[in-house]
Image (cartoon, rainbow over all chains, first blue to last red; front, side, top):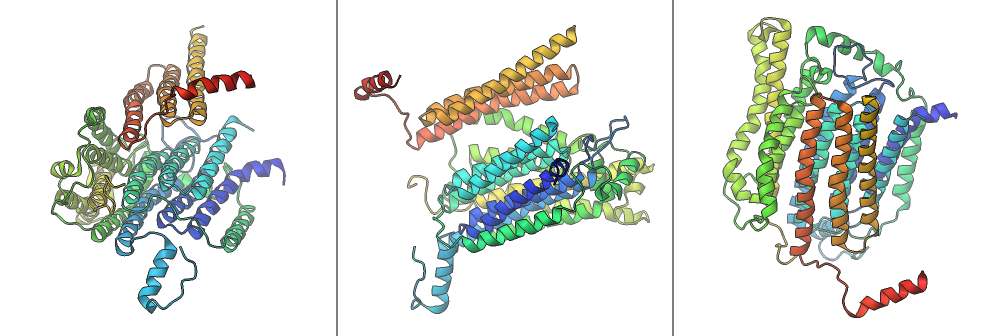
Length: 132
Length: 330
Length: 117
């Protein structure tokens, strides 16, 4: 793998690293708010991937100025613009659910919620596997 | 190793460090602040990658609204995360394997910035070359967003509308005033009150500028809606929720929420009345370019209305909740 | 000739602004107390950002971009100190007090420094 290829693929690899950090945060952490923040990291890294695909070297922002120029691809910008706003809508909805979960269970830690759910389902005879 | 690549690399390294810190920290307030920093640095990276509209939206939405909502949620739930005590091997293995698979996938991708990549040679040249003639506005992104891909944007405005409705359903759209001031008025913070009073006017003016200038530069309905909502949110934070509710009542916000989507869909229906396809703006004016301009203007205004109403009503819904710990006991 | 002066001036502003922000960052990491850190960052950030904007304005010449940069500079001039004040005020009203030197320990650090230097 020569320098030109590393130069050409560096952006994508960094995006993948960010994506994996976000993914790991969602999967391994138990706090619901932290999961939503991890999901945000994942979303932003996907946006970076799309925008990196659309970049043309030597290009400029796709706004016509009257002079002939090389423009970067406007289509990923459009897609990501809508994706960002939809992302914040999803985040708001997720946070509303977290607030309701807090009201219902008194906690936003995933394992405590699971314990309370098990107690409700099977009664209090169950042994607690991992105590607080 | 051009300067642009060096800046690119350093911004990505910043993002990586910030994401790692978000993963490791257990103080949730610091996590939320770092996520705001993450959004802002990624907005800078978007500017470097020539995506100015996207950078604008990410800065306004990610570093603004998202942070406010996360902070309000934090004040209603816990402030620290419990120490993770589960086994880390399986999630780590899954993440590592997924990362490897993705890296293997990128080995076939065209290099970064390649002008002959398939992404740049398919539909994009048509948009870049034909916008001047068919739509007549300098900002190609707005032309594609509102005119060439108008259906996508209609669907997305509906998604935002649905999310706003869902948040209202979940957190209560009660019209009665919440008893017990949830957010204390900062009557004794003189500096904050004065500066907020000075700033709210320019912020609203700037929102209108961004809304209607989206044809000529970075801007448009989404960014303008978020900035518009930010002015009302800062008013609610500093002067109290009841004052904000008196200025912009919840019922009015809910009506505006629906009016935005109605405007967008209505513009399409008017095209029907002229005998053309849905959302074909060319018939709205004397010439095609005039019709496109008018159509894009109305449609972006509808988007701005819905986005700002959703943000404001979501903030009202979150801020109207009663916290489990009152401010004195904390 | 004037182009050279303009370039030199904008280089000086950009350099000075960046150095100030860097100094503020060092203060943020090294200073011992919350209020000392807010003091370092609040002041240097405002002036550093405004100097950088001044350097960019000089580069842009007389155009619309300069007016926009001027407005951004004015906005930062108002909001950056205000947010510093808001954070410090919030800390104070929730009980955090500044770290002050008291009579007994004042002489000891001086002796320690004498040994280490």
